[in-house]
Structures are given as structure tokens and as C-alpha cells.
Image: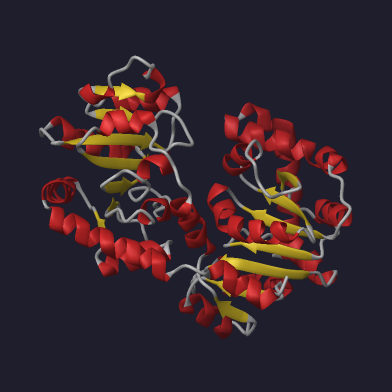
Amino acid sequence: MKFFYNILMQISEKFLMLFGNFFGNKIKLFVKGQKNIWKQLQNCHFNRPIIWFHVSSLGEYEQALPLLEAIKEKNKYQIVLSFFSPSGYEIVKNKKNPADCILYLAWDTRKNVKRFLDIINPTYVFFVKYDLWPNYLSELKKRQIKTYLISGIFTAHHQFFKPYNIWLKNTLKAFTHFFVQDENSKKILQNQGFKNVSVTGDTRFDRVYQIVQTPMVKPDFIQNFKDDKLLFVAGSTWQTGEELIADYLNNTTPDFKTVIAPHNISRKHIKNLLSKGLKNYILYSEITPNTDLKKYNILILNTIGLLNKVYRFSDWVYIGGGFGKSIHNIQEPAVFGNPILTGPKIYKFKEAVDLEKAGGLVVIKGKTGFEEEMKLLATDEKIRKQRGRIVKQYVETNLGATAKILNKLNL
């Protein structure tokens, strides 16, 4: 299997480099990033020991950030930060961040791996959650470089533990220590023969809590839009959720304001959303200094970077993705004590499963359930605040993962 994996990596790399520009924008960005890796590394000036962090995308970057910032503050190491996905790299590259060198991860061929590690020569390596690459892990083990997994989460059906993937499971031996989110992940790893495991929780809770602690003036646009009404925010929405929301808003006379923040903000998707007959709406891109936002009932955020600011002022939320592959991040709204509605695909996220059991998150399976929950949260202040307290308390009890990891590593 390892032989076939390496053949596949070589073929896929050549295919992407030759034909990637004929695909969508995301693939084009990925190919461009892959072609620039070695030039970027030449422009990175290293004069201290290196710590390399690898994340898949923006969510994993947010998980890594508290640890990145804590290490950077001591100024003993320089930090190389690699991304796999353009949806993370393209956003973070232009933001202020703790990394000394930020780039795409070179494709997981043995040749690329050796070249990449020869250049950065890291003292420590951190992978976040589950974006694990076999050739990198094998080479890190061979070089005896201390390698850690943070905010890891495993299930019994994880690809690394399939009977035909013994070679893949063996690559996990590269890890000096696993810092996992829950006891179940620890038990699964131990049953597979890995004893170097600690339950430290999810570092992303520390990250979102930092946001709460940061003073922020309410953005003028949301203050003017919300006025003195309740605010319902639908974040990272996809088509099925948008259809539920539009149907509800079109067939009732809600006494609250609504913000819809689609996951896909392309013109095509926004046009499709507007075709659902929404009334009395305004696009964020249409706001001018003279716009009277109080007269609108629906605000559509056809932009990025504002959703976490809006969550701070919402009264309850719907999180998209639950009718597709999996829900999007619920920790950002949860930290503000927002009752949460979402679709049924929550099983990949421990915090969502936990909050459903605790009563702070409700899974919506269809139109009737959505209408009932929307009416309940809009009219019953007691229920709304009760669920909000459950959510906020859950976040607060899950803080401290970063400190636990730092104490263990003594960096």
C-alpha cells in the first residue's frame, strides 16, 4: 500500500502542476502556492532554532494560534507555518500572525519531504488535529525530530487504523506525544498500542475566549441594523439551510433582525440566495455612509472577516454545513453564549455532540423542526437565556488546553 501511495503522490503532483490551472480558483491558488514554495523558503531568513507548525486550513490555524503566540512571545524560536488549503493560507498570509515564514506544505512525495526538511531543519514539529501526511511523518521519525499532535481527535474508524493500513498506522510512531481532545481519542490510541497520550482538550476554546476578552466597539453597521431588536445570525450557510431560513422569513412576520453569512460568497451563490424571495434585505456590499439600516430586516454578509464580530451581538444562531458533509465552527458563536441550531451532521465535532446532549444545541432535521425552534427562541426569553448559559458554561469549562500542552513540553 505504501508503494501505491507514493506512486499516487508522484502522479497527482505532476497532474496538478500541468493541468491545475484548468480547474477552479481554489485549485489554481493551490498550484500557484506549490510552485512558489521553494522560492519562499529561500526568502525566509533563519537565525534561531525552528519550530514548524502544520495546519490544514483556517480552523486548524485558529486551534494552533494560542500555542503559536505563546511560543513566539518567548522569542527563543523562529516559526515556520505551513497550510494545505488555500482557504486558510490565502486569508492568513495577509494578516498579522506569529509566523516568521508562512507557505503551502510541499506535496507529500519523498523527494519534496526531504528537500523541505533539509531546508527548515526543525527542532520541534506540531501537526494540528488530523492533517497528517505519511511521508512527512516517516521522515521525521527517521531524523528523530520531536513531533507532536495537538488538539488531536481519533475514532475507531480512522483511516490510520484500517486493517489494510498497517503501514499508515506505523507512521504515527513519529509522534513523540499525542495531545488529544477527549478520553475516547486517548482510549482508541492506547488500544492501538500508543501510550504517549495526554488529554488536554481543544486549544481552539482558548482562541475564541481570547476574542471575548478583547474589547471591541460595536461596528456601526451592526449597531444601526440591530437597533433595539433581537438578532438572529445564520453563519456559514449552504443552500439547504438557506432554503429553510428563507421559507421561514418569507412566511412569517418575525419581530427580530436576521443576518445571513453564506459560506460561499461568490456572485453565483449570492444570486441564488436572493432568488429565494427574501424581502426587505440589503447586501453588506451595498451599505453606504447614508444607508439607514434600521429599515431593513435582513442583512446579507457577502464578505469575509466580519462574522465573528457579528456573533458577539447575536441572540441565537444557526450554523451551516449540518445538512452537508459536516457543520462549520460552532465555537466562535458559542463563546458568546449563543443558543445554537444546526443540521444533523454533527458527529465529527465533539463540542457539537456535547452541546446537543447538554441542551445548548438543537439539531434541525427539516422544515417543521426549524420553524418550531425559531418561534421558541424568538418568543421565549427564559429558554433562550437558559440555553445560552449552557453553551457559555461549556466553553468556560473547556479552557486551558494551551497551558496544559506548554506545561508538558516546557518550551
